[in-house]
Image 1: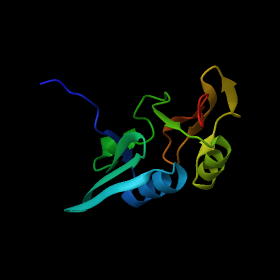
Image 2: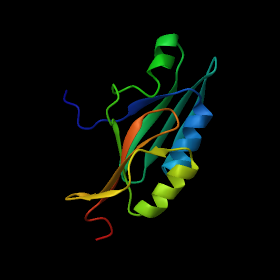
Image 3: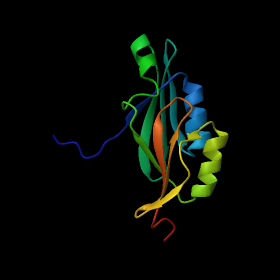
Length: 132
């Protein structure tokens, strides 16, 4: 059997509620599922209307805690598209994101690198054809 799509990507967070607050309040994603699995574990999925879903996983071991914010070895590992760069930028700053640069125009659209409150690096992108 062949996989037809990637269903989820795990994002390690120090706390489920902090992860939800950033992803929903900052990134503007929707909380798709938040199920109690017992023993302090939850199944928390956030995602966008146009696809792409994250499974927020609370770090449970020292090794997992050490990996928070460095899941991709310091590289930009996550990419968020928006149709309103200015509004999303402001919402992300309010939610604790730290932009590493001023927005710049590239052939594919407007982009800026930021770190979420947990240290993960993201690209915020407004594609060139957004709104068309």
